[in-house]
Image 1 (cartoon, rainbow over the protein chains, first blue to last red):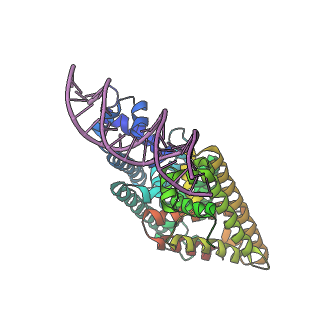
Image 2 (cartoon, rainbow over the protein chains, first blue to last red; image 1 turned 30 degrees about the vertical axis):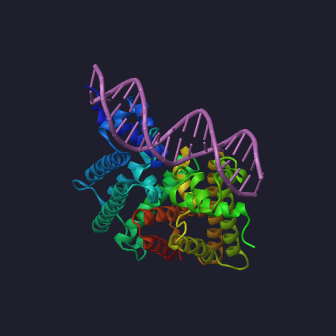
Image 3 (tube, rainbow over the protein chains, first blue to last red; image 1 turned 60 degrees about the vertical axis):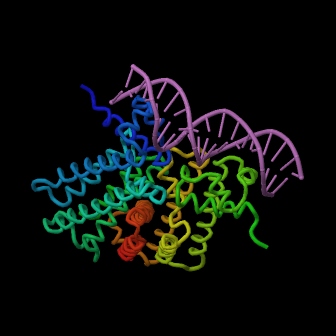
Length: 193
Length: 193
DNA sequence: GTCTATAAGATGATAGAC
DNA sequence: GTCTATCATCTTATAGAC
């Protein structure tokens, strides 16, 4: 048995959202690619903001499933950061939706419906907190060099690392070269070890 | 005498573009705010892509005027980087269009008309080259510590710094807190000195 | 749950008068 | 250079049959 309709809708909406942004995709686009009629899409997600929120919520849940999976057991702080960066290297290289939905939506923030905006803001805060935890763990277990951090605490480093990864995705997309992301991310992780 | 019409159109289009993205603003928006009729806007910029290209071109020219002004004379490499970051701190804090047009357009890249896309890609390449130059100068004059760079050459550092600044803008917008940009940028510059 | 049909408004763009 | 009027198309969203 194939996927239930709402999931197929979310798959399409996610891909379109990551590629064209919130203002760059329409119910007609989603309907054509599922395929389904436009009213059928509205039946599952009455308003566009509902669809947007659902996409971001599912994205957030999956991302943190993956990140928390990487933290489980005795994974070192450095290994956790490597998992975070590796996740994005795979994504940027991937064919379908080679970009972080939340990074794109963050750029479009002022023109998003309030519920979507709240979801995106929540993702940024949660991600930064997760990164700060991983960095603190790395300082504790010795897998990250505290002296390499040069007077910056775990929270400041987490903010920097998150910005760096999002910015690297932006560069990769702007210059149409996924290798850009790789080089930036790899260099940074090496610098912290 | 006030500004010529094309400039007033570009001012409005720039503000709208930086706020809502390419797919998030319309000729009607621009016309209403200049103010002018829609056909009058089309008279100066026939197609939306013409308007987009003109905004980005003017933005690029002004940015590099400012950056090259900061490089003139005997400014140290570190002072040049500080000028780059200071430019963005001012921008992010500003009321009107608190975001880099090119960063937003980079996120929307796949849904942009080809001429706009080319302009954005050109900006990223030029900016990275300017930063690499400033960093090389800083290594030469001793204002930037080569050992703090940890095995990364000027080009790699330039790519990292550009990503960091764009990512910091994204974070500031996502969390609706300009201070986020400040803290990230200041910490990084301190780390390099 | 899915469809056809349709509404009410916005979109990028043009014709032609002044 | 600016306007009013208009175009074809697309937008989000609803009504109502099957």
